[in-house]
Amino acid sequence: MKDNFEPRYGFVNFAEIWNGRLAMMGILIGLTTELLTGQGILTQMGIG
Image 1 (cartoon, rainbow, N blue to C red):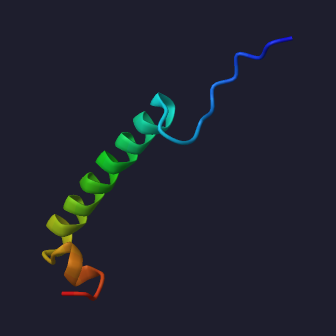
Image 2 (cartoon, rainbow, N blue to C red; image 1 turned 180 degrees about the vertical axis):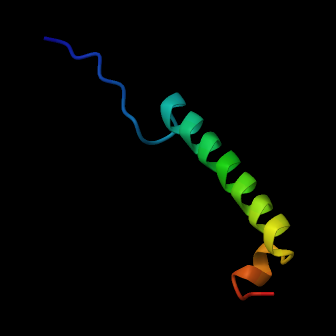
């Protein structure tokens, strides 16, 4: 019996699509908090 299982990790389309979606969400959340607080992302993290 042959399984048509595609891995969900590594450099496969499933993983890359979710990586892109999460990156877009991170940028949006970072910019939103920057607009609401008036501080840059690095300042909020205590680096800058």
